[in-house]
Length: 119
Image (tube, rainbow, N blue to C red; front, side, top):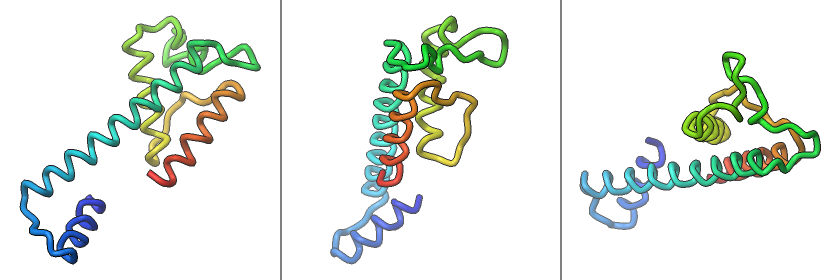
């Protein structure tokens, strides 16, 4: 919401006529960019774990879910949704039980957190 207000003020100062449709378009594009960015981050997080790029022989897929099931033995949909949830928590003050289990995952997490500072 703050981004939309700031964009509204900038457009007003630039003399661009602002309509509800323009604001809706800006908000829609902003949401689309956030969703696409988090999807890409999510896919990177999942790819690292799936390809076993690990120095500890473990990845977040080897962690247990709320039951005795591991993420690796869960459905692909559950793995993707967990990975997407992780990606969103890197950009927001949300939290999640999934954490890096090796140096490659930790490096990806650091890179994503730095990206989150500027996105």
